[in-house]
Length: 124
Image 1 (cartoon, helix red, strand yellow):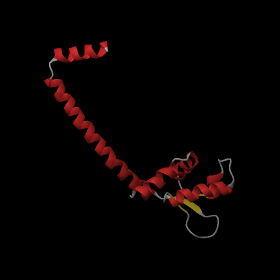
Image 2: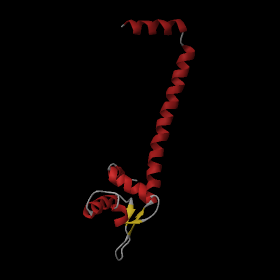
Image 3: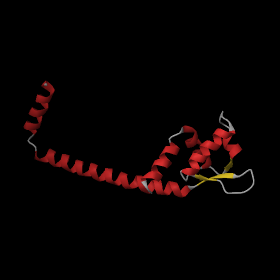
Image 4: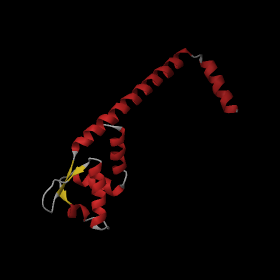
């Protein structure tokens, strides 16, 4: 997934109303009117939120007569998961290397030197 696409997806999900709409659509398709029910905003504002979600590829509304259902596009979440997983693995690798370095330091350092250095830091 390109950086531009990821920026649009995360930007769309950054809004609490749109995030709530996505959460509600995870339970099943809904019409625009059904999605609009809990919000104190105009139907036009709901359509604007849906346009942002559509542009990010998170939802779709098939062509046809009204009322059209809004459908969550789960493939986007699969691609987001892959993107996030890649960076999670990198972070875990860094932490594993740091753990190994710290463990090696613990084994090689003279306890008296460690204690002396800790005391000197406390005095500062």
